[in-house]
Image (cartoon, rainbow, N blue to C red; front, side):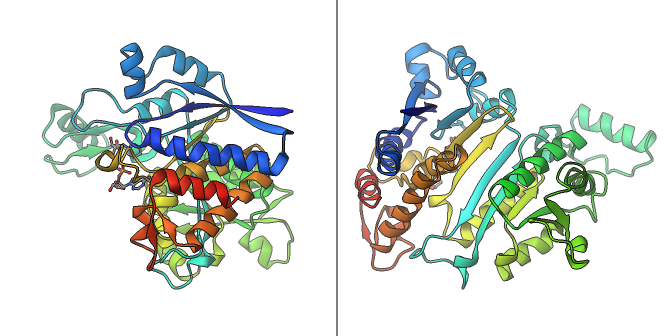
Length: 384
Ligand code: NAI
C-alpha cells in the first residue's frame, strides 16, 4: 500500500467541526479511487488554543520542528486576537517556513448564484507572492520619530518631496522573490497543461517594484522555460508552445477577468494585487465559502481553507466544511492523486445541485434546504 503522511493542525473556532466533517470525505475519496492501494496517514500537530491548553504555548517547538521537516501539511483556521496578546500564528508560520507562494484556484460550481452572467467560464489559479511588497511590514506612523527621520532623509538626500505629516510605508520587491513566485506559476502551468500565465502588475506607475516584477517574470520564462513557454508576440509570429506568458496592468485585469474570464488561466501577482484579486475572483464564482488554498515554500505545501475561525458560529454545527474538503482535493492533486480529487469535485457539484447546503450557501441558492456542518460532510461523502 502507498501511504502519504499529512501533518495537520485542527485550528481554532470552527476548525474542529470542519475537520470532523471534512476529513472522512478525503479518506473516502482516496479509498473509492484506489481501494486499499493508497491511503492518507494523518498526524496531528498542536497549534493555537488546543496547543495552549495542552502545553502553555500557542505554537510549540515540536510543531515547528515537525513542519520544518515535512513536505505536506494542512491546517484549519487559527485565531489572531485583535489588539495584541500574541503575534499572528499564520504570519509566524508563513515567515518561519518561508511560505512565499499563496495559491488559490478559483472555479465555479454549478448551482451557486453568482453576480456575473457566465461564472462557468471562470477557471483560474492565482499565485500570489506572500512575503514582500507593502506587506513586508515596514511602516511608520504619521508624526512618529521614525517617519520624520525617513521623510527628512527622502527630502534632504533623495530630493523627494514628502509631506512632513505623512505615514510612510516601504515596498521592497526583489528579483529573487519575484522570480521564484513566477517560476512556481510557470511550473504549475506546464505541469497541469494550463494555456497561459498572466503577470498582474502596476508597472506603469511603480516602475522599479511592480515593473521589476514584470521584467523578472518574463526573464524567468525566457531563461528557464524557453522550450515550453512563449510570449504573446511569439504566438502572433506563429510560434507553437504549450504556455503563453503575458502581462496585464492590474486595474485593467480586474475588468478583463469580469469581461473575458476565459482568456485567463494562471495569474502570477505581487502580494497586494494578489490579495485583492483572490477575493474578487472568489466573489465572481459565489463567494469565499468554497475557496481552498495552499501556502508553499520550495520544501513544503501547506494547505488550508481560506476562511477564518468564524467565532460567531463555532460549535453550532453551522460551518461549511467545503473549503477544507476542497483544500484536501488540492492536496490530492498536488501529490498526483488526481482520480480522488476529481471524485471530490464531482461530489461538491452534485450536492450543491441537490440544494442541500450549509447556511452560508443556502443564502446563495434559491430553493435550497439548510443542513448542518456534519450532514453536509456526510452528503459530500455519499456523493463520491
Ligand atoms: P472569518 O472567515 O472567520 O469569518 C467571516 C464571515 O464568514 C463570518 O460571518 C463567518 O461566520 C463566515 N464564515 C467563515 N467561514 C465559514 C464557514 N466555513 N462556513 C460558514 N460561514 C463561514 O473571518 P474573520 O471574522 O475576519 O476572522 C475571524 C478569526 O479568524 C480572526 O481571529 C482571524 O484572524 C482568523 N483568520 C484566520 C485565518 C487563517 O487561519 N488562515 C484566515 C482568516 C481569518
